[in-house]
Amino acid sequence: MIKRINKIEKFLKAKKSLLILGPRGSGKTYYIKILSKSMGLNFFYIDLLETDTYRKYLISPSLLRKEIEFKMQSMNILYIFIDEIQKIPALFSEIHKIIEDYKKKCIFILTGSSARKLKSKNVDLLSGRALYIPFFPFNLQEIDFNLNLLKILQFGTLPDAFLEEDIEIVIEYLKTYTHLYLKEEILQESIVRNIEGFGRFLELAAFVNGSPVNFTKMSRQIGISSKTIKEYFQILEDTLLIHRIPAWTYSIKKQIQKSSKYFFFDNGLLNSLKGELKTELKESSYRFGHLFENMVINEIIKVNTLNNYDYKLYHYRTNHNLEIDLIVQKNINTTPIAVEIKSSISPDYKDVKSLFDIKADYPDAKLVCICRCQEPYQDEGILFLPFVQGIKEIFNEPIGQ
Image (cartoon, rainbow, N blue to C red; front, side):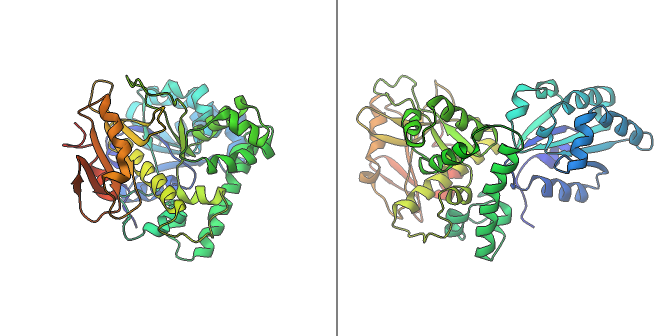
């Protein structure tokens, strides 16, 4: 079993209720069940994906309290594991009351794969009573990215895809994953009315992955209003399928490109949406570089989030059309780290000369290239780092301060 890196076990030992949000298939349910068994926890499991269970609590959310109170008659402490909590936001009112009444005698483990309903419902009632824990697919602290690079670039790090050795099964799993997202998250939840239009949008969103998004241009391409395109991207964010990287605008006089970039959270999903799961991956190709960048961006997000570094991530583009893949900055008063991502093995400063552009506004800016080199080296003031090392160390001294 691959050891997952997070603070869930620590918080459960401290008898803290948790709200764990992560994409479908990232391993939340399996992990909680295995962890609970190893910790010897006596928990009450509620799966809201089960039709009968879902209907029961949808009709009568107060039933949850009655069931818990009955169980509490014969035990001192009870752990309640509710899977896919976003399906019935009304349960949060009951959970809030139970936590208040029973304090540390009732510990809730709430998992979900979408923040959409929770953002506008009652999740705020748990503020301070349940800790928010983000959950991701495997990350580079858990699996060997160097050894499995080609597989990760093509099929991603969702546990069921990464651990499966039969490539045909992996491909079918990822295709099914995409279909289930459309069916369960979009159709069943009635998030959008025009499912065909949303399907066209999904494919186009995959092809503009990692590029500044022009809503008007996308609107013309697929015949959907730019307002709707913007709403669709918000749906992808809320259902945890993409990460948004805004443009960097802090005191940069030349900055004119204000469009955000969007990165799908997993390479396997990205390739599935583009119909490229069976496409040969050549190391010198543009596609290889694009997938490498998507992987690195996602791993940087994971490291930043899981370790509570709280750095802000941006992209940077000027009116000279010079682009820097990533700006990493703690806050407006700290020195920014400018990051270029290259899939080549031995790039030099000429390959990342756009990094020098930031020096006009921030002479002390740190310049970093994350690439596939074997050992770190410097060239014209730019630090070149092997991608696994670079992703782990970019937030630490001496780069990050």
